[in-house]
Image (tube, rainbow, N blue to C red; front, side, top):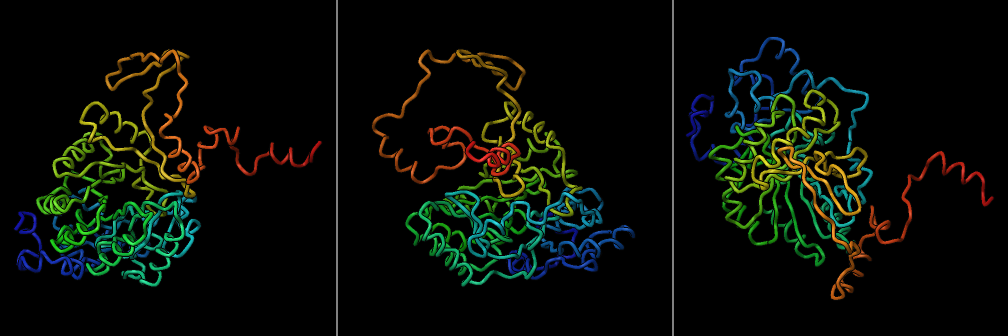
Length: 423
């Protein structure tokens, strides 16, 4: 039994129950009265908590609650799990569906923002409802998996879309569904010839590591390649239990990545992020993304300036292993996808010299070749033609010579030109 658990109301719970993920879900803290039994609440907190719960329901697994320091009102675990009155502060620029997932949903439950990949929503349930949740428009709405009929329609769409090669199961948290459903999902995905990889997005290794059972790992191992991204935000979340869960997944051949969210008052410190990412590597989890906090309603108090994320990247690049340096990402509002943001390492350039700076502030030059024209090797010509037929979006038409310009559908200049007809 961990030292933190010995100080909680669950200290007498038998190990067999504590280590059962179904028990963890069944005994989540979901009410103010239950929360008051484990955390001292200031009078004003108790008064406003119910208002916050009207924005997004609360659910905290006993395991995750046991990591909270009850004496510290600013504890980083607490800030991610316990509602505050700040969640009722809705800004005019907040977006209920920032990624426009509903707009980009060809069938219910499936979102496709990119030509070769998309997501299937498996459930709206999470074992713990993060207070910074971006999909709060639907999270916890029913606390149940979506129907197989709905998900079968998603798979049918993918079967009819040959460019679709990469599928992410998410929700809610897909690992809150039972093992039989997980296996059914993987069987369906593996039956689609052009679907090359499957991914899961789950926070259970962090907030309910008991879910990563030997049986679940055996199922994942049967359907390679399965990739998994989890969601550690703070070094305090790396515990013997979460380490053991990640170890079981890694031993089952599941590559592990981590997607953190930059959160004010939780991890908006470059040194915290450096420690988090270095510790993640020790448990075989590769830092993948740091997300700028989204414009979802009620999470303004978590959002930092973008400049803070750039500063964090400065403190990572060159100051730790490249394996510990993720991408810093802004998920563009409106469904435009993920945009990587980096400090500027390219200082200037001429036709022969590129001037760069490194993490120390040292300036250096890289000499371009005299012959700067590249051509695809002859042996890849057929391959290139097949790839061109699959995707012609973004900058590719400009590079390939199909277009000389890309412009918005509606501009003042375009309206003026159209008004002139052919004159």
